[in-house]
Image (cartoon, rainbow, N blue to C red; front, side):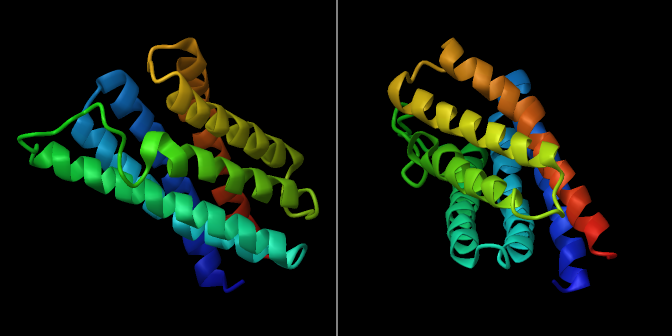
Length: 196
């Protein structure tokens, strides 16, 4: 991989982790629609370079599976960015007839943000087992993150009640701990390994 792109991918992964944490703080703690929308959009955008860098590292092991992981995760990242952009536009200029009960038309109940991204991260984490470049802890943390995202998607799809423990516990674990650590750790691995 080109060393300048590796640096971009690593820094983007770190920024995606920070954006994810700030999204969780804005959404859950501050309950600020404008900030949560902004960080959701930024997290999606930053993760595109990070996930592309991860794909570059994994494509030699299993090209087809790595490409599938990239397509799933990039679709999810862009869907997340669009979802955040849609929410940001509504937070800045609220529509007069908004129905907050309707799911986001691009990312209904987090299909892309949680469901499809969970599948992509799980596939990437599984592929990391075939490379000595990635620490075992990063692989397992990625799998845990993927499972939590899939539980969140199914919870938001089926339960709907945001205060249900089926949603709250995975959201707190994923948003405040697992996902930010996974992205930041991935960024450090991408940056560290670029000098080899």
